[in-house]
Length: 417
View (tube, one colour):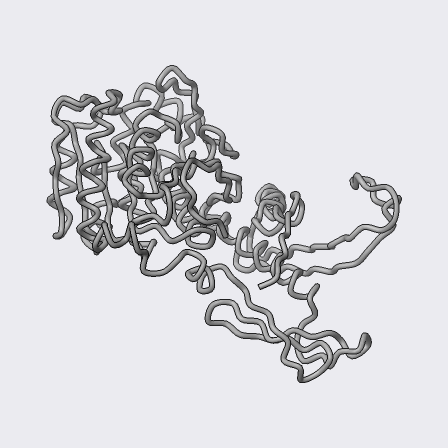
């Protein structure tokens, strides 16, 4: 867990496809009034002026704001050609999950352009949200299709084509067209259940102001509309971005409680909230030599050692839990990827075994002396999958977050309480 100390912090977290996403968390001084999540525009990145300036201005007003690059964009890993509108929505949910586990769940979400459509789709899946804001957003994700209309025949014929957008070349696949054609953002609006603020520039030449009208009419109250007058689509003028941040901060405060009280006397310190989200408590039971009780949220279970090493075998051993974490994460990651692709995976089973081997016998290990840990993982995939799909799912297994944690450098800090 990390406390809020002001400034800016680099963030990395796993996205919807298991790739590491690069983010930046703008922090206020002291405990924040709220945590906000910002989604950038189509083919943009977290460092576009509007995203950067709005996030920093909100931080100055007491908000913590996470802006990040969607999969395949900016400094994030992954292939843009394999992404789509749905994966952007899933990346937003993954970002909210990361904030919930490591900082505090977001209560405000903001989306610019296509990012605005994405936050409308993601909002129902983030229960802590109270306020949703869109900036020059399309009412229909399919609005972006006009950007590569000339390449559409080639995409339909070959399955993909290279398209130049904002002087950069992107590879667009047919699955992207199919995904945005199926997106139904206005259905999410009817059941949003959060306060909504729609920002839009009447002279926006990229996304017409009629989109704001469609979003506003589809949403239920409480909802508000703010005109950005002569601002452009990207809010490239400094004063426009500042205006959005100032209005947003004042508006959101209405739905977040007393802003002054939240700033000076937070209801619950972040450290206390951590005991509920993302913290595991392990304590001895003293029933036997090794017996432990383990609490993770509302779940309680036991830990022990086998009789062969002096335990009473009333629960799994520590390495059993380690393997269980890796196996669970592997199965979940493979399942999410298969569902996103629409592949016929009926069941995934993971078998794991832990042991130690001589370092000299390990060709891929940097250590060449003594013994090293080795985990054998066997993935069984049921369903009418072809060889290429099975091979890809095997690769995806290595991208599960727990796998990445175990194979990356780990820092464990221990202190007395």
